[in-house]
Length: 258
Ligand code: PEP
Image (cartoon, rainbow, N blue to C red; front, side):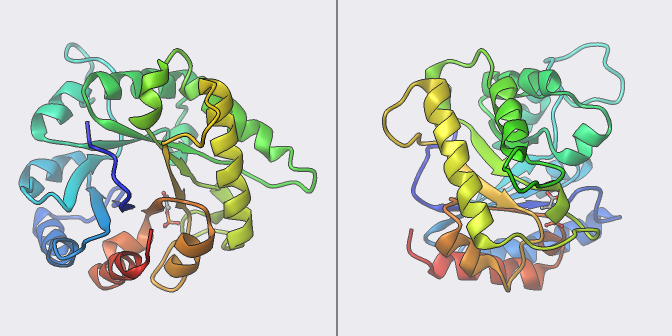
């Protein structure tokens, strides 16, 4: 399990990109050069499964994550990759419950199983939660709470420090994003998530869980999100595929005080 530090956590989710391992290696090595020079930032790259072996890295400022995992160790599960296989490959983090997996039918219960398997494998789960639409009255917060409660159901109190929550409003993700959220909106939800976590785990103090924001993060908005969004880092989709943009995000994060 990764020792939690006060570093910013910058995670790149490459999704089903790029199309060749040659491009993956070139992109990764450009990012690694910059990430290795950081002092206040931990960079995580989540490439497709097929590139993990090739991108294995000994750097401690840049590590690998997976985009998903299968919650059984081994067996007859065609097409899946187990948490144990990922752990044995040196994977440190795994995205769990991404909205694109939920869109394919993944339920909160599935996410809960994956979170538990991830922790069994000493892989830090990055649990994605977020509303599909917003409403004036703030009822969308109910769906975020529901996602948190069910994803974390049955986890011991000690796990609170071993998980990461990524707030990803669906309307702000990807090329079809409606708009970027206001930093104030990110801040409000990050406070809400911390409150729900304190209630679940019955803590009086602020829970040590890292909270990320994801959705249209780029080199232009990174500073304001980290300065005023109340989060510990970001989950980046599109901009993580462009080494120029992503290294700019890493550099800007690293210059900001935590
Ligand atoms: C995502 O899909 O997790 C994401 C954050 O994508 P983008 O940065 O492209 O909005």
